Image 1 (cartoon, helix red, strand yellow):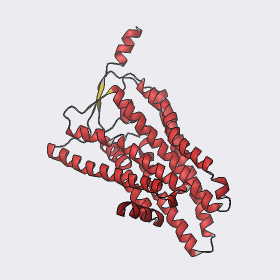
Image 2 (cartoon, one colour):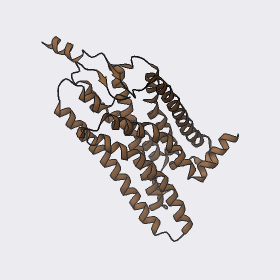
Image 3 (tube, helix red, strand yellow):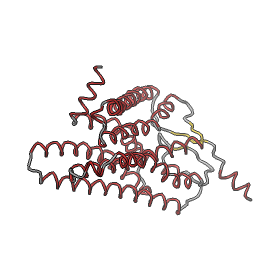
Image 4 (cartoon, helix red, strand yellow):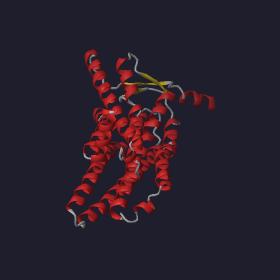
Length: 310
């Protein structure tokens, strides 16, 4: 009986990622478009990471966190776009069972890490603006090094549970995922049996993670705004608001589509809407972040010009 159950559970050895079905001409157009987007994303985020690494003036907690965030963006977008480009040029568009859940794990983990990094960056700005005299004593090298390690490791630890639970569901066919990546919601919909416990755990995980990180960020910037409004100097107000505006723009771009998709996975979003929203936060947002951070930051623009012209 156990052998029969195991055979049924493992009867799906691979999945088919439909991606964006279209004519061959449109497929090649998509390949060109996403190849350019992916290249620009890597170049933009790599430029910021290198600027932070090579420019001594940027060796401060804020820029070190930004450099790590940019490198994280490169990892995040690389979990999906290369495979999506390969599928555009492929005829079978298949991905192995193990490969699918590996992609799911890294995509989900890097996404969680980004949420935590946005919290850490909000904490850093709140501390620097609200407690400027105590900031050097509190934000020591030991503290921000620990925050960097926490930001990178937290997602990989927390995401083990949902990935393992969903991978243990029985998959006995069909194996076609109407998406361009191994997203957890379509995967759960392909299971042969409805597991309410897994769906509940997954939903609670998303609600707690996203609501808690988003609430932390909003509270941090609320304190920042209150502090800035009390500043007597107009120049200091402009500088503080400029920095916070960049951070808040990235927060909105990241959290808004995620909350639409993952806080309520049972809400029945149409497949086309799921793909468009996922494409926005997994491809478009990492492309926009380097522009947002560099265009509104004089120190970063100076460091980038130094890299380009030397």
